[in-house]
Amino acid sequence: MKKNLKPVSKTNSEKNSRNSDFTDRFVPYSMLSLLDKDSIRDIQLGDQTEKELTILFADIRDFTKLSETMTPKENFDFINSYLSRMDAVISSHGGIIDKFLGDGIMAVFPACPDNAVNCSVLMLQQLDRFNEERQLKGYPPTRIGIGLNTGLCMLGTIGGTGRMECTVISDAVNLASRLETLTKNYNVNLLIGENTFNSLNDAKMFSIRFIDRVVVKGKTQPQSVYEVYDSDCYKLKRLKTETKTIFEEALAHYHYKEIDTAKILLKKCIGINPDDKPAQVYLDRCNQFLEKGYHEGAEELNHQVVWSKEFEVGDPEIDRQHYNLINNSVKLLNSIDRNAVKDDIYELIRFIENYTNYHFSAEEKYLAEHNYPFIERQKRQHKNFRRSFKLLKEEIDSGSMTKIYIMFRTQILLIDWIVNHVLKEDQHFGKFIKAKS
Image 1 (cartoon, rainbow, N blue to C red):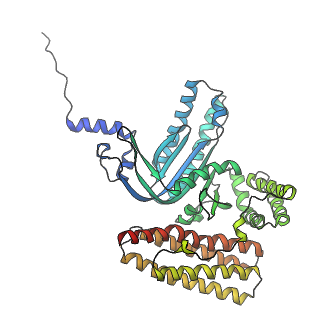
Image 2: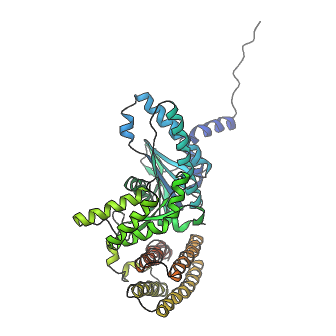
């Protein structure tokens, strides 16, 4: 006679483990940990924290056109096949997918920005393998664009009592999204903002070149944009590196409206590397300027930076130091412009170098006294400024670069860095100290 067997009951720990595995697919534990939560049940509407994050946006090119050739089932199969591959790469590099945007991805990287750049390069390499498999089945290849930007972000929950979600809000997010869109303009795969570039532990580990200056909607200070081309094929990567100086010098002349010189340099660049699409984009811009007078350049280069109240952080001594840094940086730019004697230029360079060391030391002491939570971020940025300024000095010392190129490099490596740092990082600790007091 058979006994009636009762179903084995699950223990609470087993149930919680199963539920945790299930909910983790919708709200990753790594996202919860950033909010200092152990479980999705602990989340409350309005929970928030501030973190330094690198934001990634990735999007499939011409997806609407591509989707029109597929049935609804084929669309879902294609999207899920693509997203699952990208998910694996992002997770393996410490990234957290914030949300899927149809055919797009928004992810955040809490660790160093180098992880985000490495991840992006591997995503593009994974895409190449994905396309190889698609082509074997007779499908057309897929292209994506990726934008990265780094900054302080508010991570928290938004929504209502009936439905809420975790998300990230900051200017850094808006710029990352803009950069992803701009990849279409230059026909490139990966763009990073100057905040990411200036935050890298070692920029020499990547193949990077300057590509433009853009003003984000609602902002006045331009941001430098860089192309990372490590995912390009061997030949294209080698030729972009070989022509990097010619390309960046051409862009400097374009932005200063020295169009004839810019065209000569761009044609030289394309002659060596016919597949350099951004160089062709700028050559088209030069022709457009000559034909119609339309210039897609950095118009703000015609206007010198002048100290104003928006630079003030609230501490008289720190504000005085910022004032001296900005004024002497502008003096250096003007000295180069008017072909001042080398002794005068080097005197300004020595002053800026010594003064930044003095200023950074005083500022870091000031932040430590006020227990500023992002002091290590400030120290890292100060270290990276020294790296950029050293590069600028080497370019000036070489004597082989044109005056326009050196002026442009002074603008993006020195003046832009100081202005953006004061307006973002230093304004942030100014607000922190004001709120604390």
